[in-house]
Image (tube, rainbow, N blue to C red):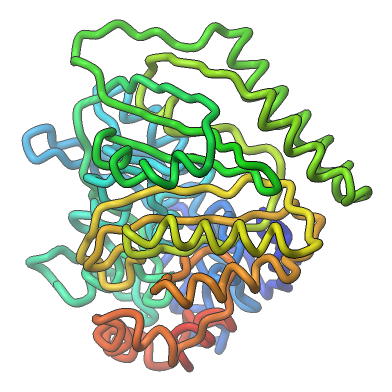
Length: 432
């Protein structure tokens, strides 16, 4: 069978596809594959742009391992099967009166896949999803099922809560949750220079602050999301406005304009200018996941790097200078977010408050010099690449970038010495 990831950046031929019904099935599948000398890889939604989920052996699809199994309100924890899509998890938690404290802007990924590659949201006082993992269950290459937590198999736990799929197949996760809450969202167009001067203060002053810069223009779209009082009324966007903005303009029209700029690149600057000027302010109050998540029907490729928090204006100024000085036409906005420091071994925010900058291209386009130039800027400012997004870094570089990288490799050597869970991407970033 053939397999392609969401963006079309990775393809592979599979020896076999398996869809286990339970944890014991997972163990049997892994043991059988190892006996036949086949490599194994679990896959979620295939939303990584890198080859993190690629295999030429057995692909394990965890679609049957889905759903919330329990919630502990006293401890603020939910135990969830690993294959649960984030959109389903958000709905199930909401029905139980709970929510994840933070989310990214896409909810198509599986929980295990999002955690394994370091998915994060925005908010200077909030950490990424991996940092919220309290315990997990994982099936190792020999088929052994192991429970992990800070108190039980702590080294394996520390590695596996952002494990890149390199250690085994995670089957269940216990994650931090909070009582369900509403967010007040205020979105409006502003000027890039003004935002670069105030971004640090905006990140401090809002629960969640992010912005999108439209290349070839001086315009940005800012988003400020803040919690409201527990009993405040829900005031969602009118249905017509949500359909106009999120379904028509952000998806259908954006698809058409990207097809146009792909075929006729010289129209890009004009299209971006029109799009940026078409933005109007909007404000609404809705459930947290409804505010965090944005429908993304237009396919793209992406590179995202995490930087020390104070690097943001320098990175964007240099990126803007490069865009203005070259002929490449960039139709996608540049996304900028913030996150708290954490202690996850392979987290891009390990040990430092971080800002994130992400560049995109329409999926029919090549990364071109744009992604290469961005990576060069990132390297000059202490960047760390998102594990699920395009980059060219390899093992030797990562050894210097992550203080606990060698600890992660030691766990990998111990649990998977025969590299049952290896693939070309992991060989590049972790070594053979």
